[in-house]
Amino acid sequence: MRLADWIRHWHDGKHNQRLRARCGFPASAPKDSELTVDIKRSAKRSKIVKIHRTLLFSLWAVSLSAYANLTKPIDISGEFLRYRHAPEAMAVFGSDISDDPAIGAPVRSALYFEQAKLSVKTKQYLSVIRNYTRALDIYPTAAAFNNRGLAHWQLGETDAAARDFTAALQLEHGDVHAWLNLGNLELALKRYDVAIDSFSHVIDNGNQSADIYISRGNAYRAKGDAENSLLDYDAAIARAPFDPRAHFGKALVFYDVGNLDGAESEFNVALRLDPNDLNSMRGLAMVLRDQHKYSESIGAYTSALKIQPGDALLSSGRARSYQEMGDSTHAISDYSQAIALQPSDDLLLRLRGLAYDHQGDYSKAIADFTEATRLAPHSAKGYSLWADALEHSHRSEESIEVLAHAIRLMPSDVSLRHDLAGALEHRGDYASAIQEYQAILRISPTDADNRIYLADDETTLGRYQDAARDYEIASRASPDQGTLLFGRAQLSFYTGDFRRADADLARWQELHRKGKIDALATTPYYVAIWRHIVALRLNTVHLITTLGAIR
Image (cartoon, rainbow, N blue to C red; front, side, top):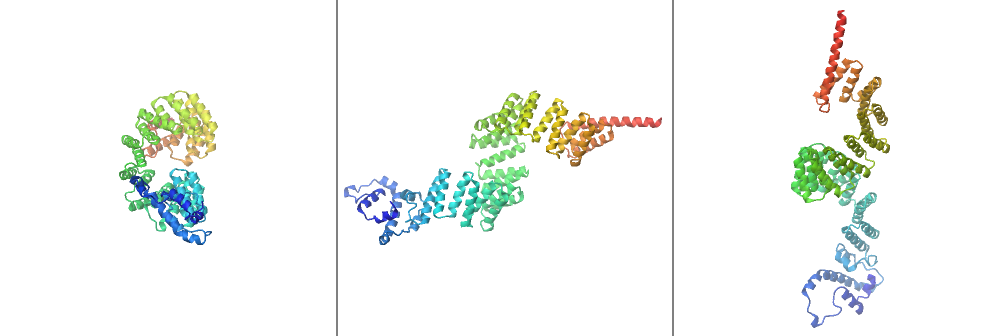
């Protein structure tokens, strides 16, 4: 029954009886013998009855004017709006009168708004969008646009979310929530400058809350602007000193720039403010691992797992700490727990495969790498690790075939061709390795490292002119690269240019003493041996020259 009809029949006896019964009142005046009331039951109903009475009184108050003109809609918006956020109001009126013209547009819109809010609690986002759309069709508000945008965002509909946040700002340009949501959406979409502009607009217009500074700090950090990010986090801390989020943000900035001590300090502050913050626990554990404080890192991960057991990310993080500490057994155990929780995670399988490989259990390593490549058939790293495990188990031909298969899938992947060239060199097939290096240089002509490796193999096969040309090309980009100096010295030795060989080896040793060459621990010994051999040849040449002069 429409509201106007309901009001028209307000004094109808039978309807009045039904109405009283519906609203919880006696259908007629109680008799003396019926005045005994169940006090407990009455107390439970007192709140809803109060709401009923208030709203019904409002309708009765306007019914007098309704008699004068029954066809004219009655505006009771003010009374309804008092209850627009009350679920009890919906319990009384329901949604069946949301389109009744007797109710003002703001009220009808508010009823749909309330229905949408209820759907948010149950995460029924399609229903949320539908009800906010109805509310907006009746009476547009910035709040409805903003909230519908959030629902679109939850469903991954980022373009629709951005349109709604923008529409909210067109209605209310100073709506802080809409600016904040739009900025965070742009941040999630990696449009950092747009996000920063949104947050800056709010700050410039007088809203300088900690939330805004934290959000802009996050955007600056994501953009790589550590200086401005730290300034914003400090501004947030000044406004909300007990909010751990800004300290967490500062810790991430310090970690990004390599300041591990600063990161550790800020993560600890965040945890003092919120001891159960899993993100800060995970961050602290990660920093401690990078500082090689493996026992402390494992302890931090263990504390986090006590709060949230069964977390695959925490288990795998602790596994990495065990692995870097050299404890493959515990690492494998933790990786296995994480894999049980996320069996389709190819990264976890690769990490456990590495642990098996380091432990010498190559068959299990190969099994993990095989499954990882099945789950991620276009992951070059998975094939490289699989090939390494096969090589470690002395199955060189299978290793080469795995890499060749991967290259057929990803012909332009330089890392795969580099690994295949290395496997071919290990087999002694330098001619085929040269072909792979040449293919790499066709893909990446400025790759100095692989050009040096090509020249090394050309030297090995006695193709000295080709090697000299490739060393010369590489030297234009990296004249003091250690591998260049060492390789070219060997070429000079084989071609009889002992002074050039000695000069390159001496330069290598000088740069290594200054810490400008990062080499394997054994390389300095090989360089010294080569220089000794070169010196012997130089002495021999000098002796022969001297004897010839005497004659």
